[in-house]
Image 1 (cartoon, rainbow, N blue to C red):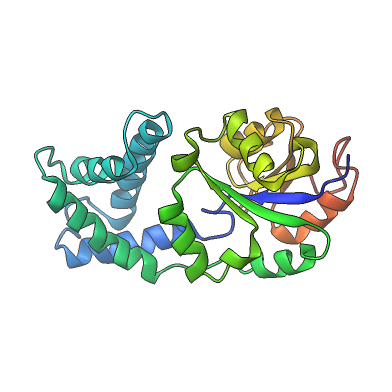
Image 2 (image 1 turned 180 degrees about the horizontal axis):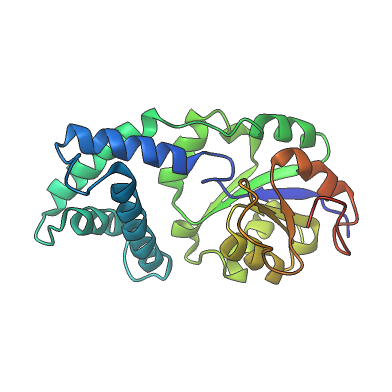
Length: 242
């Protein structure tokens, strides 16, 4: 069955989330007078990411809401369990302003989308909310590249659950075997897509994260993606692509 469409992850796949998060948090801590509290900027960022991952996992599991996980991230980071909702929201909003100022698309994104535009349809599947991701895609000049934007917050199920991938395929009106998924996480994105019956493409930008799951195509840049889609995608990989 030929591949007819590509579904995309957003953060750290199309959009340099890690770079924006690092720059935004560093500036925010300086403005808040917290620059020395966590030892070093690297230590502060590591703690923020650990807290983010923990609270995001709770949200993905349906244990808390989208706004609630943001507030809990602030309370955990500041070590202020008593912090009120309004104060937590205001702190997070100030951080977001710095984070957004550092937003950028990876340089290989537009060339890849241009190269694939004539041959494939495109959509997005993200473990976030449309309220968060739709404005981001618009600001980055990407929203009109995608027919559908499918978000876990509205869907009620998130990656790596097969139902999330299949819902995105349904939104395109295609079978799973006709769709490729491109994401930066080897388990949540690549293994999840593979297990749901999609062609799984793991984008390992730094090339140093191990072999990844079996049956997944590993690329180190989006310039390699057209070759994966055009090649023998189900039964082996070309040189340089796992």
